[in-house]
Amino acid sequence: MSDIRIATAEDQVLLDKEAKYCSYGDTVHYIEPPRIFSRCEGSYVWDTEDQAYLDLQMWYSAVNFGYANPRLNNALKQQIDTLPQIASQYLHKGKIELSEMIAVDAKNKFGLDGRVHFNVGGSQSIEDSLKVVRNATNGKSLMFAFEGGYHGRTLGASSITSSYRYRRRYGHFGERAQFIPFPYHFRGPKGMTKEEYGSHCVQQFARLFETEYNGVWDPKVGQSEYAAFYVEPIQGTGGYVIPPMNFYRELKQVLDQHGILMVSDEIQMGFYRTGKLWSIEHFDVQPDVIVFGKALTNGLNPTGRYLGP
Ligand SMILES: Cc1ncc(COP(=O)(O)O)c(C=O)c1O
Image (cartoon, rainbow, N blue to C red; front, side, top):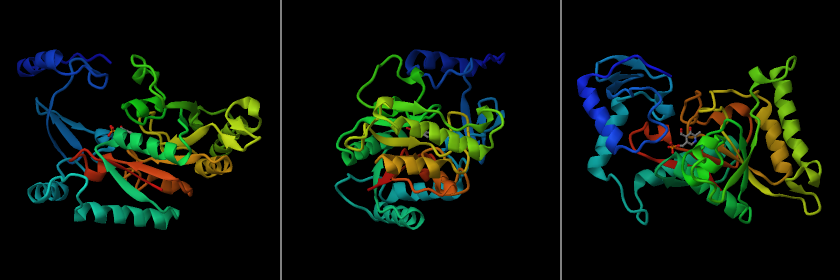
């Protein structure tokens, strides 16, 4: 996208330094010149010229509870003065009570008995969940994920993220995914209702298991080569796409029949982005692992977690 805006002299000094000293990741330079922001409140961020922008994405859902939320900011300030962090071999009340809250909630909603493991961000939690999945499936490293799916930029996470762009310069490091079409009804065949299209997509996926010649299933021993299906219940980075309501229920039946786990990546859509704690709650289905991060701390502290067996 081109932008006719000319940077102020003050911004230009910073932009020159940025060009020289900052890593030139592909997340930064979407527009030229990149904007420099200086403050935030509620749903708005302001640039250095005091122009307000409504952030419809809320920092990729890291800030679901609003920028500069006084209640949450004060809780963070109090925690910094009390006990900001502690080595993981030691315990503290907050970690235990938060784990309990999340685990009890998951038990009530999904019948899922699990423990909560903490890490420092979404991608890192995806990495941890990959370990859990491998451990639970005798080391299987192949996953299903969606076309358009996004799970992060660390090595394992970018291997199960559909964009080749994130892997192009680095190759593969172990994890691999087969990408399955996401049921985006708007782009589906003419004449199908949303639900029919949801079922159609599940049937297409189920075809993979019909015969050993379709490549993922050994019917002689009843085993799949694939360990888990990573889903974003509502696709985020891939375009904010809501699938048909019957889709996950039907998909999970196929996965259960073939011993494949369902991992719900709630990193972007969790923590009330969709009105419920977990976005998978809308779909009447029980995931096996939940991965979350971002808005748990409203973007104030880099944290992520997974909940799993
Ligand atoms: C669905 C999803 N999974 C994983 C991630 C990675 O999280 P992080 O950026 O905290 O590493 C993101 C980030 O946007 C995401 O949207």
